[in-house]
Structure formats: C-alpha cells, structure tokens
Image (tube, rainbow, N blue to C red; front, side, top):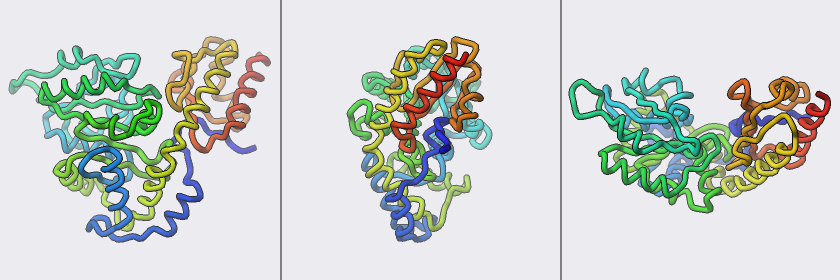
Length: 341
C-alpha cells in the first residue's frame, strides 16, 4: 500500500514539469553570480514579494538566520513569539552563531504578537541592556493566517519604534491564497521576508530571502560565511521557478482538502478539531478519548504517517502529493479505529 504522509508539506516531491525544468536548466557558478537560472529565480522572487532583490539559499533556517544576522549586530536582540519557528525550531542559531539575544513573548491564539506586550519588552537605550533591533513575525503560524489589518499596524509600530521588521514567510504563499491577495500585498509592510520553496510549493530544496538591494548585498556575505554558497545551483533554482510560477496556483486545492478533512473529523467521537476548522493546509486535532492518543501508532500500521506535536495534539498537513481519495481513505481508517474501540 502506498504511504500517505501527512507529517508535513516538506515531504512533497518534485513533479514532472519541475524535474524537466531541472534537467534542462542552464547553469553557472552562483558564487560568482554566473548562474542564469539562479538569477532568474531571484528576480522572480523579488518581483513576487515586492522587494528590490532576493537571495537563493539552501534552507528556510539559513534564510531566517541570514536575515537575523543582517538586521542585528552582536549583543543586540530580536523580539519573537515563543512558538515561532525562528525561535523554537532553528537550533538557537541566532544566539549561537550571531550572539543575537532572542526576546521571546507569548503568542496570541491567532498567531499575532500583542503589540502592547512587544512595546513593554523593548529595552531602554542603556548600556546594561541588549539593544532591541528587530521584530519577527511568522505567516502562516500553525496554519493560521495573520490578519492584514494587524500586519499593517505592526509595520507602522515597528517603524515608530525604530525596529527592523522581518517575516518568516515559509508559507506566506498559503496566506496570500487564503486571503485572495498577492504575495506582494501580504509582504509589503516588512523589510525582509523568507519564502520557502520546499513546502507546499513542492520544490526539493531551497528558500528565497527578499529585501532591499543593500540588505541582500550584505546577506550574500553571511550566506558565504554560513556555507550556503552554491555552485551550479541552477538545477535546484529551476525547481524554485516552477514552484513560484506554477505550483503556487495549486495551494488552494490543499486548503480545500484540509477543510474537507476537518469537516469529516468533526463527525468522529473521541477527537476534537481545534478551532473547528482548517485555516489553510493544516488540521489540528485534540485527543479527547483514550484511543485517539494512540492514533499515530495505529495509523502507522496502515502506512499513514502523521505528526503529534504533543501527547494530546495531532497535526495533519495536506499538500500536493495527497490526493482527494487519500483524504477519504484517511477519514475511513480513523473512523474504523474509533468504532473498533
């Protein structure tokens, strides 16, 4: 039986058009700036995000780290949510490699940061404190889309407080599709944005960091220092071009599959769909019966892989490699397990 993998949208594989583009990509040495396909990807990413320039990097973690290192100096700090990816899931890279102090704060249920709370943790201009330099948001966060009104307000706030403003936009394309806006509109308030190509967009590897020309110029130095300089990277960049110019239009299908799954799960006793819905391509389920705590292990026996962020919460991520009939099969398997208990 074919494995149904709902652990993350990072498990997506390049489709036929992507593989063909990779095979035919003209290449050069990207460290010298000579790879035409990388250059094309960076131009496309800059245009889509509404920024002056962009930088192709191996991973989203490196992209965010380059942004932090470029925005902040040693001994400075950035404000971030406690469950944000840049703080919780990127190995403490900013602190370890950049001597940048994180100032994590509690995140609101909708994925935003309370700006009053942000203001309260901004350090005074005093030699005793790390200088607060940067505010980081994430969109989407746990599948939730940040409201545009909040983003605009946060952008104005950051400028008023003299803070740089970075977006971990690993799934910002999902946010744009859900809002029925362009990626440029969603990114407009930010000084920099990291966009992941290897999640729902289906590329095998890579992210693009977008910002001003001066910001990206400095970011290239950090990329080199972090070991992210690649040579004939056009083979990979070609996949990124397909991701941004073709696959982005398929994200709505993932959202609809997630909504279908959430609706079906609401009919099964012993589990609870958190928020009562899927916001984008993720469905979070709370276990409320003894059998449901065993779901990851029981489904694995059926060649269905899922992720449990905690003992009582399950995350199901829909993506381009999960067809509608696989979603229906998943629902049936969970129903069979519930009935058997």
